Length: 290
Length: 234
Figure 1 (tube, rainbow over the protein chains, first blue to last red):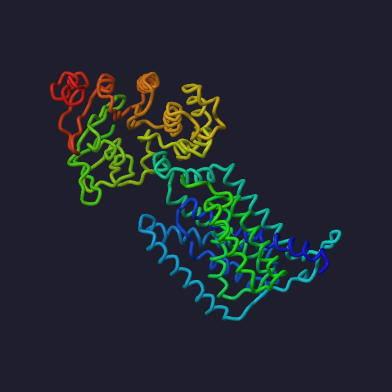
Figure 2 (cartoon, chains in turn orange, cyan):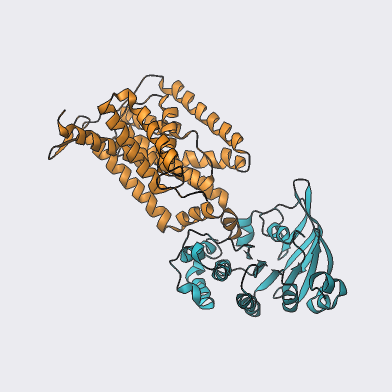
């Protein structure tokens, strides 16, 4: 094989990985602040993907253009879910929370099956087969746009948490729950906001990913798992870690697909996870528990 | 200003407060004295809306706030400097202060209050961009008090503000509380340092096993044999 192929596959894996990273960022933010593991994360992403497909087939509006409204819909959905269903479970044992979110995930998968059926769907944009030539590199236009959009959204999220008072208040809740109550932060509302933000991230990631892969309702659980692998690899609760984990997993999957077979890519993603757990259990950018 | 009557609080089956009543008049310092586990922190957290009472009333300026959520209570002007300081360790000192001013009542006054707090604690000014977790215990206590003042409170409950601090810092913290009170801030002071807090206080209550067993003016309690034996070791 010519050497350029490796480079091409690596770059396209990294670009897909950026979208994975944004998806995992949503999971990481939700866990880092609310200490709830969102077992419906991949399912929420498929909802974002189906909204993108529905809008595209009805109005021919590009998923990347519709990314912001789709994220907004998912934000409202996530906010409502936290405020109505999850907040009452905040002080319950973890297994109750687990059952609740698995139930939510099942409802989503089967709801999508009823609405859209089990067949794979995709979006055929006018630029679906375009590519960029940069020296020896040939990269799909869809992946460049999707990766670029993921970087933009992630940067906006970092800026929000760093510079806005609301973002600081959410970090404060994650930092010291009692402290947040003491200064009079409305913790439950901030939790709902956080879940909304996590859902918006994964919704935006869905709008990007729909350019790259076909969607079926069954994709949800697989991507929930993928988001876990990424977050644990990158370091639980670390936002840069989630992005880095996404890039690594995207890269690993792409290279595994090239060097072995595309069906072996999950094996290598899990292999990376096992290696990280063996040698750096807190994740690449995670802090040690002690 | 604050009137608590017949307050019962439970943690599961364990009763933390039993029929507690007390009154705080505007502009005063009221001390609450008691051994570890007597229910002092439970009392403060219940007034602050962090714990819910099973029975009883908490009236602030004539309005019943028992069972109201903490963000509502804070927004009425009841601030708290919590036990263990409870700063946000990974947020900067500046961000910590801002978090005190997230209340609707304080948002517009954020810049003015920040200047006031930084004049009161010039030490913090040098450390504005430093994570709060890297401050010394004394500095964290200053930050906790400053963060509380950012919320423009009318009444502040201090829970063990001198705990774990060096003696010179303790003096400084207590002097700060006295000065704030002279400027018109109403204070509730929970202190293990009983002698000092009784000297500062206009009125004081002794809390034992969740019950108020004794109350009176600061000097009265300082002269009381039971208080002298149990808390002052005399």
